[in-house]
Image (cartoon, rainbow, N blue to C red; front, side):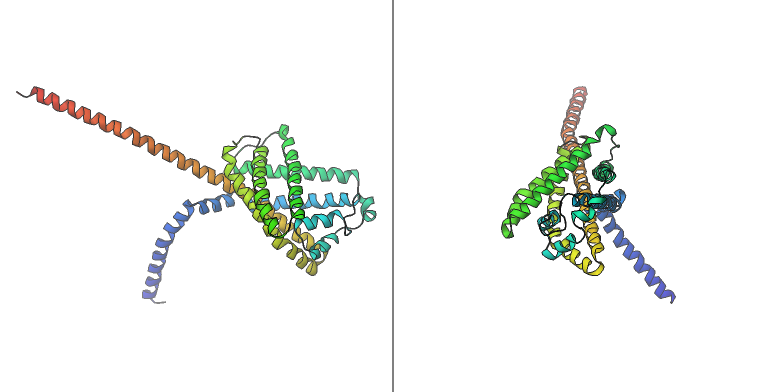
Length: 316
């Protein structure tokens, strides 16, 4: 490369950097830039994978335990009913059912140790979610006296899932969309508002959690629509490629996305609240400075008048 070409390339690089750096600085100051930086700092993806793994480890032992009591493999089984309420197609429902045998097949495998292990994992999932929320709001870890909060959250979560499944089973078509938008999305917002306040031990005020409640509830509602489109097709495709283990892969990927919503939406809500607080504080500071400025100007004018009168009184 000749010297002229190298000089031209260098000038082009300098000009490109001169244009890129202001754009990058503007993006970093924007809401999207702050969200991107906070997601990286909070390691939302890694925490979501941990939550998904805990959920899967909870999901499988719980269903295996239920197999000993309820027929999860038949057409009228709990698994089939839950899959239909989740919005799965008949083919995807049949693929999920193949993960489980009859209660005679697995009754002998259910032990007290297995039940204790399932209960431990049931607590570990909301406990890990609580640690994620504490990291987002930069709060210290709570003591053992607050152990009841994750358990209460888990009970409420199961109730919300049941209500969502009931709405999906009792409605269809356009009526389902209308009922879900008018009933389920507000319910998800209220549940998100209460659940984050509960897991944080009441250390963040209700007012500060309003953006988190709205954003999380709307994201969970959108995720429900995503589930209807994505999950059935993914389960069927993975089962055709990999067999029953492919269903586990599909459920695990779905749980990762669900955990991303549970962590990412509150993170965005916290950022929105902090930016609104800074804007409000800046507006109050500017208003107070504008209020003080006229009084200072008046005092200066008064002092000037007094000086002029004093000078005139000394003139002969």
